[in-house]
Length: 198
Ligand SMILES: Cc1cc2nc3c(=O)[nH]c(=O)nc-3n(C[C@H](O)[C@H](O)[C@H](O)COP(=O)(O)O)c2cc1C
Image 1: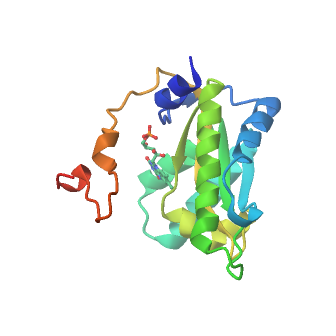
Image 2: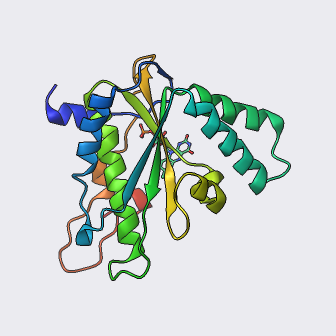
């Protein structure tokens, strides 16, 4: 596969089985994360690897967070989330080490974390692993963030579920990029994606 074929064949999947990437493979994947564009070299990305026996511990914290946010969270939802976090071969917690006082705006710091995450997804795909970026309300729970090592103003950006795909990757129909692209010629542009002809 060419690098372009690689980029164009990535798809998210949560149908994941063991093995997770080895330590050496994760080192390579995380090196790709360090290639994210980063205004001011603030390095706002933080990664927490959760695997093996730590998985049910994280799952418990996730369920506790769900209950904190909604004391009436249905039992089946809690059980589903617990099972998911306990059985996915590896979860990579995406942390954001944010500096609100810095002249680089927060939104740029957060985008750098997202750019790093995208590099991770592509690097995992290149090595034959599957992954999906998930979030949910718990991502905005400051107590959970603190339990994972991110006291305010730092935050969570979500979780990457990682493993070996246990089925061929889904091939979702992708939008036509033409619909999302315009060439500026001095006047405001519009986009076919927004229901207007450019
Ligand atoms: C910040 C962020 C949070 C997301 N949270 C969830 C989530 O909680 N659950 C989910 O099913 N997909 C979530 N997604 C979407 C998936 O990661 C994925 O993009 C989607 O399933 C489409 O698959 P694709 O990446 O192959 O297009 C999230 C994506 C992003 C960028």
